[in-house]
Each structure stands twice: as C-alpha cells, then as structure tokens.
Amino acid sequence: MQRSLATTAGISGQMVQDLILECVEKRFGVLKAPHRVEWLSDNGSCYTAMETVEFASMLGLLSRFTPVRSPKSNGMAEAFVNTFKRDYVFVNERPNAETVLAQLPGWFEVYNERHPHKGLRMRSPRRFIRSSATAGCPV
Image 1: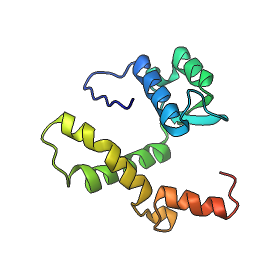
Image 2: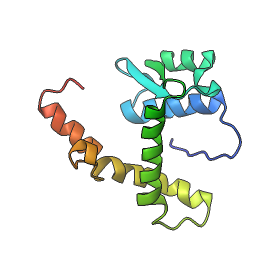
Image 3: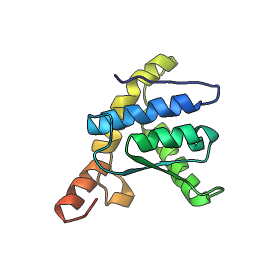
Image 4: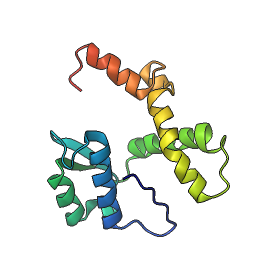
C-alpha cells in the first residue's frame, strides 16, 4: 500500500517509521532488507529517536545521519529540491495538495529512470547504476 502524507505540522517518529517500512517494502518486496542498507537522514529528533533507529535496525537498515551544520550535504539536498520543483512541480497542474501528492510517484519515476543528470554523465540515476553494475561496480 502506497500512501502519501503532507503536513504543515511537525513530523513524528511514527511517521518516519511508517515511511521507512514503506520504503523497504517497495524497494525489496519484503518486510526486511535482504542485506544491511544504510538509511541516511538529517538530525531531526524524529529520525534520531531511539525507537526510530531500533525500528530501522529491525528492518535491516543502519541509520546514518548527515553531519550537523554540513553545508555540503545540505547543498545536495537543496539542489535536489530545486531541480525537482523546477522540472516537475512548477510545470504541472497543482490545484491542491491531493493532486500534487497523486503525481509524485510518477515524477519520481521519471526523475530516476529518464531525467539526465550532469554529475552522472547525462544519464538518469537508474541508467547510471545499471551501466556501473555491468562494469563490475560492487554497488
């Protein structure tokens, strides 16, 4: 079951745990990752809470956190958000939150499968990973 959540209030640990579970199910098709996977987030209390870290560990994830006050990691996140807004959000109809939330899965699919990225030699992320895998990359 895929669901979307939007809020102007804070994000709770339970929301993060629901997100983590949904991601593992969608990515691996099971309730636990088949091997250890790093889960990178910022240092918000909903991500760093012991309950969230332990829940992630039960699913086979190793919680990792961006360095505090890290301009580099924050810059990468901001670049993604700006690109996504420019290339997807601002060029599509968005009369209400429900419409935007319904379009997000398709936008992410295009971004990951077909959107060329300069840092990936003008390939999409998935195309880059596929070409790297055939070249013997361990990832």
